[in-house]
Length: 244
Image 1: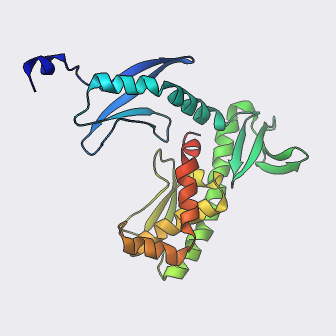
Image 2 (image 1 turned 180 degrees about the horizontal axis):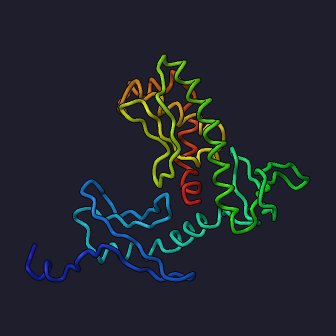
């Protein structure tokens, strides 16, 4: 490469700002030696990332970002508006949307009520405490579902689970420690039952195989033959739940 070409190449920044109809959006910039093309993506938490191949030029990357500005704006809007833990909002519970109603009463438990317009979650504590009360209740529901699913899969695989913990993870749905402790994202209770069942089977299988080699996936299939259904759902819809 000639000296003039080297001097004309713009340095690649760590982040850039792109203007959209709804306002400026900050996009993180990454160079990935394994990338073969420019790629624009959004993390589960809703953070835009522009990835360049090692040989990429910043001018070409900027042009790529501008061409995909509409997609990025739409994607971020969709993630932000899917669900909200606020009075009048709506969230899924085990895959079924529920409207949220804040009750003025201080004491009491979250109630799930069927109405002519669909399912409703009635949350005590007023507007100020609704989010905390609702998340606490969702965690307790998630713990109950995960305890049951993990016990069933552990029995199938002939292993024992040392403990189950709920986490507020930003990118992971579950993990398994070498001490056989399983960690799960509480948001799994928002997804359809078969999705939580898949993640439970996945982490229990790690007690047998602490890797993702073919033998691991055969172990998952022993515990849950149709595991691909839950795996595919998470790939398609997981980002919306993570952003909640």
